[in-house]
Picture 1 (tube, helix red, strand yellow):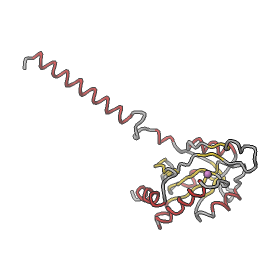
Picture 2 (cartoon, protein in one colour):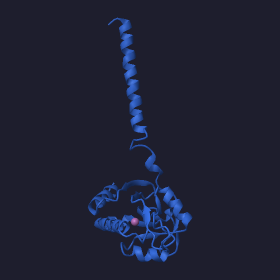
Picture 3 (tube, protein in one colour):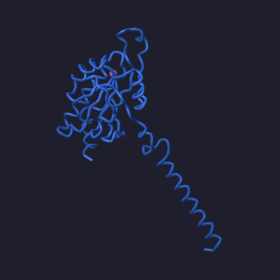
Length: 201
Ligand code: NI
C-alpha cells in the first residue's frame, strides 16, 4: 500500500473509532438510558408523623429496606389492593421479610390523622408504618418521591372527596437510596420475587 493510501486508511479507521466511541458514550449517558442518573433523584430526607403520633424521619428506617406506597385511607380500591399485595409479598419472604419495612404515606393529611392511619394500616400488616403530617410535610415527601396527587375533579367540595394519586411502589435500600420501583399491576408473586432478588444480593 502506498504511504498516502496508508495515511487515508489510518484516518478512516480513527474516524470510525471516534464515532463509535461517541455513540457508546451517548448510549450509556444519554437521556433515555436506564443507566442515567434519573432514578437516583427519587427519594430523600423526610420528617413525618407516624400512627402513634410520633415524629419520625427517613433516618429512623436505616438498616432496613423501605417499601413505600402513597395513597389515602378513603381510597375505595387502589390503595387497599396495593397494601394487601405489599403485605402478602413481604409475608411470602418469611424471616427475610423482616428486613423490609412496609410504609404507607398519606397524600390526604386533612382526613388521615395519626389515629385514622393507625386503624387503617393495622388492617394490612402488623409492622406497617402509617405516615402523615402537615400539608407542607406531605407536599415535601411527595415531591421527593415524584408522587402526583390532587383532589379528584368534581368531588373537591364534598366531604367525601376522592384523591387522584400516583400508584408506583418504591423500594429504598437500607442506606435510604432508591433501589427500584414496582408498578401497580405487579401481583403478589412477582413482587415477592422482585423483593427476594434484591434482598438476597
Ligand atoms: Ni388510592
